[in-house]
Image 1 (spheres, rainbow, N blue to C red):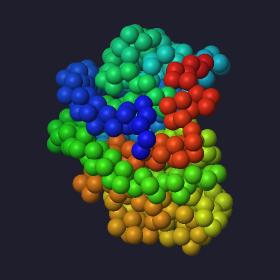
Image 2 (tube, rainbow, N blue to C red):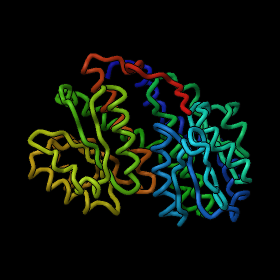
Image 3 (cartoon, helix red, strand yellow):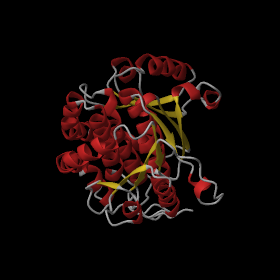
Length: 346
């Protein structure tokens, strides 16, 4: 890879996660103890990459904690001025900058309704942090590249830590300590495939497919490709994809499959078979032998990644793919066209 700010921040992710795990353990333990028993479900307010982190939370807290998670609809709080009843909700705001007025508005209303509130942000002095009862800093340092990478994976790690402590599951928490090593392996293996990415520099559109925990990963990788290259890239769950979008597949159509080992294995394998029959060009992020063997380009994941934290690792090859694709297209990945680092929406 050519040198860029974004590349440096992608490579910083393992160290950033390591710092986060060591710095925020006691804080998140205290928060979990305080809010436990005070809510029946979770509502998350977020935009962009942070919204994709919220999608991960839906599966994480659903599977591991049996807690339902809803995504907030900020326009109800701002444009329509009709906030819903938030009784019995734990309200979490996720924002790298903590600046966006619509996300802050959700938290203000949650505070007004006496909900427990948690801000997950990189700026502990931001409006989001100030209005929230609890704050969990991301410890990423200043994220310079416009496209979010380390703030996204740190947000996932924070949610994973919170899930463990809400469940008082120390065994599961211990698995988090392997994330930095697994991310480093994913980075190393992805870098070995860099030269093959040039094959896709002329592609005009793409589907990214994941399911379960990695439904969020499909959305985040699709977002990174759109941000850095301008290529129309659409994320789907493998289930939704069969309800119509598969009709768009034709010979040579690029499809990225995210398929770490886990509960969705057979679902992804069956979809891949159908895609091959239709002539799709398969790019896979996987450690499943059948998927790897039948893909046109593979980014191999470490075998030992537990499914529940696999999105923190599986997104890294997608970040690298998007970065390299932008370079192959003669674009500047540090300054994508039309984007700014802090986006304030109402």
